[in-house]
View (tube, one colour):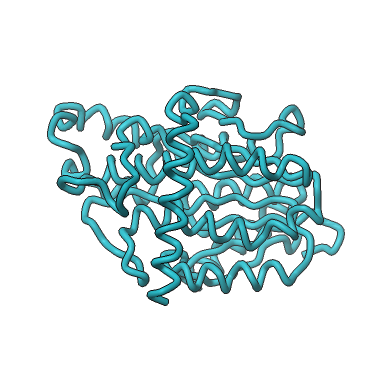
Amino acid sequence: MSEHAPRAVVTAGTGGIGLETALGLARQGWDVTLVGRDAARGEAAVSRVDGAAGRRAGRFVRADLSSLAETRRLGERLAGEGGLGLLVNNVGGMWTERWEGPEGIEGSVVLNHLSPYVLTEALLDPLAAAAPSRVVNVTSGAVAAAQAVFDDAEPPGPHYGLAATGRAKLAHLAHTVELAARLRPRGVSVLAADPGAAATANAAEMTIDILPPPMRPHWELILKGVSAPVASAARAPLAAATDPALEGRTGVVVGPEGTLDDTLLAFVTPELTEAVRGWTAKLLAAAGRSS
């Protein structure tokens, strides 16, 4: 890695959209820290990043971001390394079965909202030190399926993976817009990137049970959507991270084509943002008591 290259961190960077994003960054001259859980996958990903860059440009850091305590420790470690030009919060996913992180919070909420929230907060000073810098939060069209109720950790009724992920992604999109306004004076741009559907390993594990019953007649269409190449899905986060035309833009969404697309912002209202703010604080306080 070069002391003169700009530094980026990509979470869930050892495969799928995260790795493709990291490869694109390496080709553009970035040093990239890949965060993931599996050392073997991490080593293989670093080799690919180095190959894309034509030099030693990649590094793997192991962390399980389903643990908020471990996410905080990761943030402290990375913050101690100095200025950071880019943070890509790619971690997230959608699961058929409900599961919980170590702090007892439903997994979709942890990985799609709380974990990137915690990591970003830990890295605000390094990001500001390297300004102009960017935070890219990977979002999803699943926000359209969200039950936008933020009174409790989970909404009432049965658990469906699409709706659970959509709700968590909606919460993080509202946070993204709010954070963008907060960080503008510090020279840090905050953008959301919607990669669209793609044939990721996570998508391959989904079954029709992720869908609420009224949506199940559309399952075959959804399967067709998640057959798109993963490399093409990296277009949105890469554009959000590096497109010079977005310099100084913040609080915006880059769509699957790599261009600005405000479709998902229609789901974010001041009332929703206020509800998400209080809900997030309550969940983090509960997680702190359990860790």
